Length: 321
Image 1: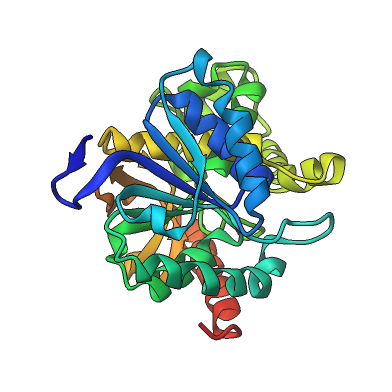
Image 2 (image 1 turned 30 degrees about the vertical axis):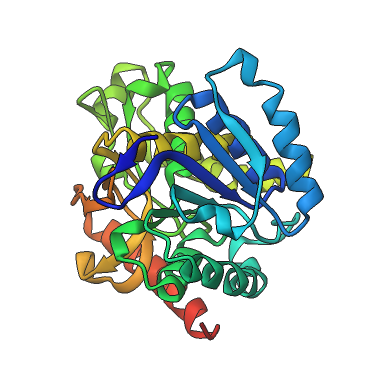
């Protein structure tokens, strides 16, 4: 058994709390990654957790060896990572912020159980609204700030790269861009820092025959912002994309990659924002959050970022923690 000397945890053990569509998809994606040798599924519906564990286990012969089983909160003690997907689903016509009261209530039952076990690892919040729930998890758990992070706008950023790749007919992996702020309606594409393999966005667009930059930027930003609503309208839930985003964050943590990902973590004065978790480019490694990365932003983007933060502050102020 491998142990992380810093946190005294089994670095190859992960716990998934919540076995709905997102939790099950995350479990399946993580199983295929080969990152862990032990995975525990916890859900208020124990039969559901047992069923998902059994179903996913049947794919192990096609992947790397891993023990997958349903458990309870006592099983988190030596885990290195807890992924929390538990929460009410976003319904058609409902925003992520509409889920606040329901999911804060759910977190008030989950986080104290984690705290009670003197958990020494990292908590990754995936449930929505992820930025607010990351702040809630941090306050309720009493864990160091670096060890509580949210999946943030990692998926939104992937959607932006995908749309730009399609627009420019290039590999989306060659697109370097970030969505920042809230994982939600006030999210901001950081256009000022977008480049395609080092070439500024507008220059590359013109090279590909596009000149109506403002129109195309607005269209792509709307596509990214509304993509979850479209998927929910058509199939009632989104889960594959976020599962891949969660797997990517887990990779950065377990492999100590020092990857720069737009996860959600506590802000302390950056861009004039304080006391709220927000999705910003961040160096992520074995200890969770290392530091925020100050990317280039225009004055308008900074103003929009501050508005996004204020939106989250206002919602949080209306809900007692």
